[in-house]
Image (cartoon, rainbow, N blue to C red; front, side, top):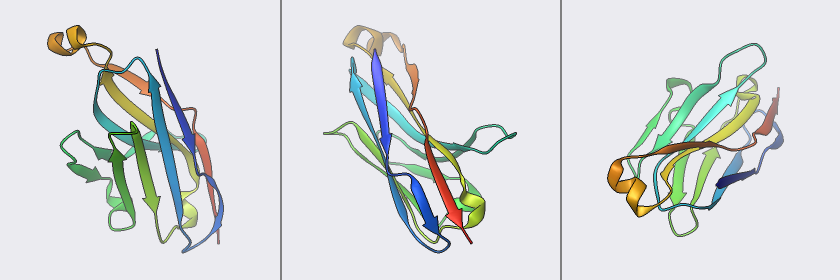
Length: 125
């Protein structure tokens, strides 16, 4: 089993910054992709940033040039640095990790999907 623990959310004024962290622990052989999603009430969860195991990153258009995703493979941790925050960034932020649990599963291409518990980010105007 894999556990993801998020931290770093909170209340911040517009144009301020926050840094989210998400640490994975448990039965992990190889983490492939690490992502951040966000969700507001009544809307679907939205993918906003992705980092592959080769450190390739992609971003949703509304966060490009403001948010930076990074990862520390020695700590199985993914980060989201959020700068120049806007009120419309207010949401619950979730990390997502896609990983194999063993060498055998990795060879077979069995990749499981894990979610963090979510952390609230509120940006005041």
